[in-house]
Amino acid sequence: MAELVRQFFYLAFLMRRPQDVPAGEMTLPIGVGLALSTYVMALAGPYGTGLALTRAAIDITLSGAAVWIALKLTDRLDRFAQAFGGYSGAVAFINLAAIPVYLSSTSSADGRVGLANFVLLVWNLSLLGHVIRHTFEVRLPTGILCAFVYVILLSGLLADLVPFVPA
Image (cartoon, rainbow, N blue to C red; front, top):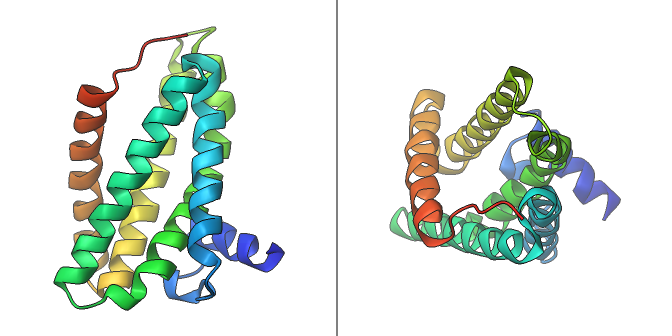
């Protein structure tokens, strides 16, 4: 398990490809479990546990479905566990970095919080673009463009389904 978490860390910092993550049967559940738990930890402080869990479950489910459909359409479904499990595990590190940012955003609304949120967004887009690039064997700009479009669509959908209401 420690080696798997280490691979998630390397992937989070774009030092590995998703196919470098071990392909074992535990990659997907451990990656998704880490993503879910850290997502809830990041949002529970400012928004409450119920809203955090709801948003996390919807976000991760929709993301998994999008990856599964894209892999199915491109006849690469065998890459799902590594691609989505690796991405989910790597996102856990972004979620951990977001915890102090989200907690400080409830006490102050200065420019540093906005800048930190922007850095987290760029990190997430870079990670998702990196995973798309290697999973679908496309060029990096294509991967980042797909990541950007996906994040915009997902953000809008989540805002409609489960709007943020501070706890």
